[in-house]
Length: 90
Image 1 (cartoon, one colour):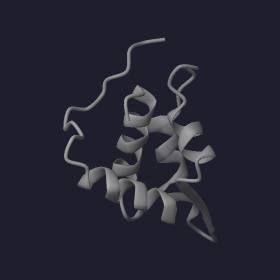
Image 2 (cartoon, helix red, strand yellow):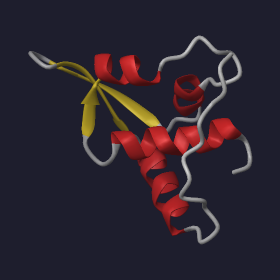
Image 3 (cartoon, one colour):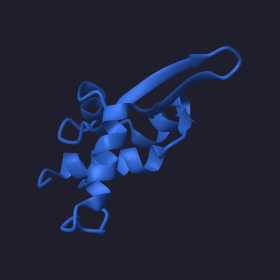
């Protein structure tokens, strides 16, 4: 994964983890107006996330089966840098 957006998508998947997070929390942390860093949009368009609706809990976001597989395979990859990619300002 050489594209900074791909690395950030993996960061998003790791941040969500195996559980689920409230949609509002995910949006506060990951939504951006920068057209060069469409992390949330990329993860959704690739089918890596699921949106769940539960009465009394609102909407939550969790990894899809595809997202979980990608996260597992990226963790197993020996060449993945542990350094977090820090996006530049738009």
